[in-house]
Image (tube, rainbow over all chains, first blue to last red):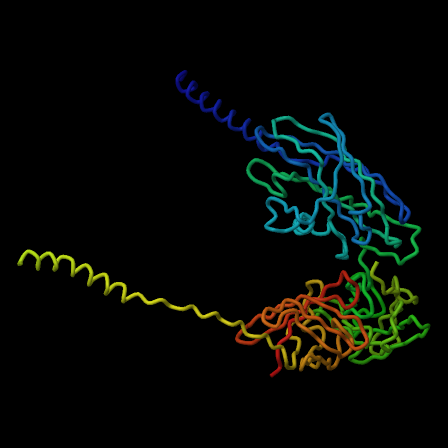
Length: 333
Length: 147
């Protein structure tokens, strides 16, 4: 009996040692503990965001630099409009944008920005006009078994394009030695999406809502009249007069740079939106505005107002399911 | 006398072998291969188109749109968004190894873009990348000769 217990105890010790080692190794991945971010800001102002991070390290590794990615609307151009400092028990310093020529270790040739987008998509935003902007610390840290902790202080200008905006901001961290990898020893990255929509107010441009489903979406979100523009009417977002309508048509008015107004409001193949599948309730039409509105070479469209109608043209759906038209401004910023 | 003959026999055999081996070697002249001049003359139509990676081929009717190249000039038929909006002249950066094509629309500044000119299924294709509207919106047209 004693002998039996002795043998089992020996095995138990080995097992415990293995589990302890596994826990030690598995512990070692960067973690975002919290993000302290305002909920609203004025267009063009600079906000302060504090990202608290915890970095347990295993022994014998590095030195690696901490990498931070921030998901924001492209038009904010935060690569040029952001300063980041960090501080913690191990020291302080700055974080700078990672140049496109510096590729991540496990990114299969992608840039850091593309690697982040491939891994984390656009974090629940509904319009694909967001970008991940990567930054890295000026100093590296070694993986020596200690746990590093600290705060990343981000000062970034929001709404640089002057548009009122609703969007979900997100943050991700990893290190240059691992990238966004997981293995039996741990997960070497951490993502934090701020689920409450961040709101930019006081801008002069249109409201760009990345957060809430829209009755209509224009793709690309930023375009000129010489682009091919796809308009989508999503009948699943709300019940409208066009519920059950077999065909949906575009009724649009273009305002040109020479002060002219061009109205195209007919129910023909030219204006017909095609349902993406039999029961999808999503209708699409792609136009080249230049010919759709019959512009001369000298004319350009400044903005377009539009409704969706049924075959007869009597049932009209406008912005927010009201009688007001949807408005789309042709611009690149 | 017999010894001398034997000695000669010993030398003659390797010399003959050497002569035969040397004679068997023939210096081959490698003729320089002249790369053909890339001729894009003809009428081209779009067979594939994307906008920011989204396939537009079956969404927009490209069937009538043509780019015709002839004698250094081009014409557009049934226009769609393209590098240029008017007819004009074109040049290639290198007639044998072209990597860039420049369109000079009448009365407008030259517009250049990188292009590829692969042979796919035995047919030349012309792949052009450009932004006719906002610079952030990138279009790729793959064109193929209609004749």
